[in-house]
Length: 297
Image 1 (cartoon, rainbow, N blue to C red):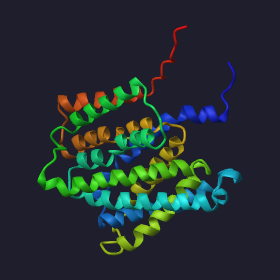
Image 2: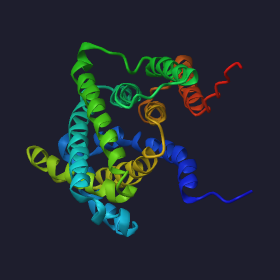
Image 3: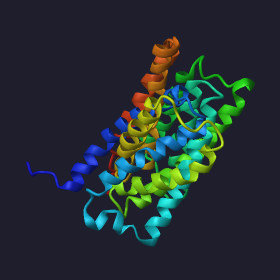
Image 4: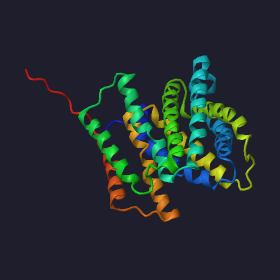
């Protein structure tokens, strides 16, 4: 058996990297609530504290795909990705404080359905029958997973709408960062986008409680969510279809349900457990190879 070339190795590692990155991001809403700063300030610290670490990692990239290879188009894509991610974090962190933990994670991951739509409408991709089944299974699983704790109500309406807006901005971010990955390695691309988003968030963050007394939550956001979580996702997004990227994001609501059970006593019932199982099934179905067509002679 021949050894795999670097491109094949990267492709095989992309899916587990996407799942691991999505799992890291699932702890974000909990950390935002633990932070003793305003929601927009925690968004800034997540980005600002991550920049030095990402720049150090970016310097290890090959010269032809490092920071110096960005060029004008690359910098423009990095700016677009950074501004979209800044908008995503701003409205999401505000939404986290106004709705349930489950709603905040679930609705912000509506990119699950927006990314395949982008693939269909803009890229002209066609989904095979198993992929349509994967989307339908994921939708059913999400509906069950929310259960009691993610009910839509007037009390949570503002937070729910903010989290849905975050999903739109996050979709734009993923599209821009995927295109930027065509020019740069993962960490140079993420370092540029993160620096741009930190600069965009700074004036908003200064309007509220800015300096933390306890640095642990914001450091955990920066390292766990931005450096590790987004680092893995940015690495993986170049090698996966929009459908698979979107479905992998559904790992986050499943983990948030577990956090809610352990931290807040929100023990999932049979419906929620079935929903989690459907999400896992959707991920498996989405990864099935398409059956080749055989035309009759």
